[in-house]
Length: 118
Length: 109
Image 1: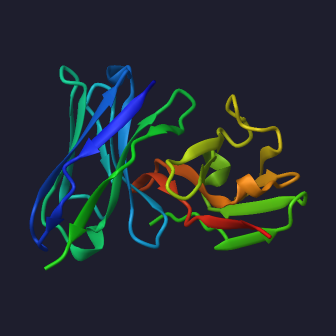
Image 2 (image 1 turned 30 degrees about the vertical axis):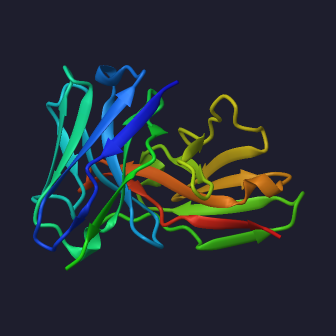
């Protein structure tokens, strides 16, 4: 069964950094583009970042641009999100999800919680 | 920045039809997708490319589009349909290649 495992969430002070990881199991990782989507407490889903299947193209939301860096290591079947200069409003569950053949976000992990607070 | 607008909540009785709308200027140019999210569970695609239903999704779920508005229709709503529903689309001409609507809480009375 295809599963996604996110890790790296933690409590961090404003201005700090975190690196999130996502490692799918039983999943053809290399064939998909991947995204990070977050959900803050009491709010809806928010797309954060995406990376193409080869890693050549990356995309960011306005709030992530310049602070977050998405990357992937196809040899390790792993997706990453480096988050720097974190703000209170970055507090959220972060999910990795793949872009399926129909263009939808097909498979989702259970998320990893990032809490930014002093 | 580009936004997709959904009503915060929709309430219907079992057996009735629920319609959830999503509005956005770029919707005529890009496919729309709908996700169901039950509490504590991962989102599930219920409609893709405006009106296609993935395998395993009940026929009572359907999608339609008209101009700058797309609609998720759930016919004969069941208690198990109570969830948050999110529309999603793209705006590759802008700064948000992918965008979600704010979500609609469907309550089955």
